Image 1: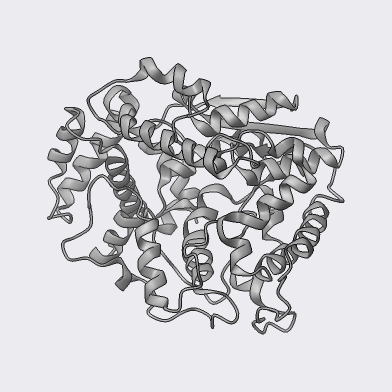
Image 2: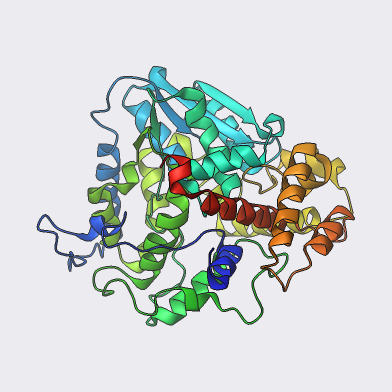
Length: 432
């Protein structure tokens, strides 16, 4: 049985952290002798030189690609579109299949489908409203290697390799064009504890209700000292790479037994990104410049990183869109009111709903598969008596009565119970 601290960390972040000497990311920072490399002293201090070097390197990531079916999950963001643009530039359009999944009216589903149609790409759209869910399906995902993550994310991502099989090549934007994705500070922070504190705030899984035990501080579940000296890797990158990307992201999008290509995880691209000054990485500044330079036709179109506008958007326009997106999110969070009559108006201006998968709040109220899955696991979790500080029935009742939107919290509790059952089965009985 997991400790209460481990359970509370899972209920805060949606995964459990583990650390290994030869982990996924440490290998990127070692030289041929196995010694840790230090960040090079010759940073790209001139913007034009940084853009030219990055453009040349980025294009090289898509050369010498083998023949066969290449499957690319195409969202509304920068990473997947860059992969598609790079492969099309190499003449592989006829060997590609782009896949968008989610529900109509959401940003990734709509923008991803729009890009596929715009460039006449082979494309499959998966409407997740018609994809059934169950405890057994989620347990199988845990068995397949995604245990102690938010199993619903892994379940939906696994639909793609399940659809196209082991013979295809799957392209992933993991861990992101900028490697660390978001740079958490506008400056390089001096304190390991300060970085951990902000990281825990930013990556809290859901905001609707605090599920952790009274007095729990997630910082105490994390290493009290950095993994590496910050001359090798910044503290912000360490917590993102070695904690979140390794323990969560990779385990819900990359599955054993399938051939994955992760061009942005290559040592050459990694070295380039780490040679960029903080100001060039912050907000994906230099990445946007590179993409507009080499793939303008692709990135002067709507994307999620600029809230449904192009990468060439002005700051004034982006601020306006940020305000409108904020208004829509506040409206969508209202558990009682139904503003679907406004959806078509929002969508005309590409102010889409910001759901990655399905509307979990609605699913738990209206879909029998979700209601049964969540209620069954909630009752099993209640019988364990380990979450003594939570009234699980009250959380369920408030959600069903539309007094609050506790969808993600309820699914996280259900995922906790399924992961606990996974542990109880044991590796021997699972055949692992």
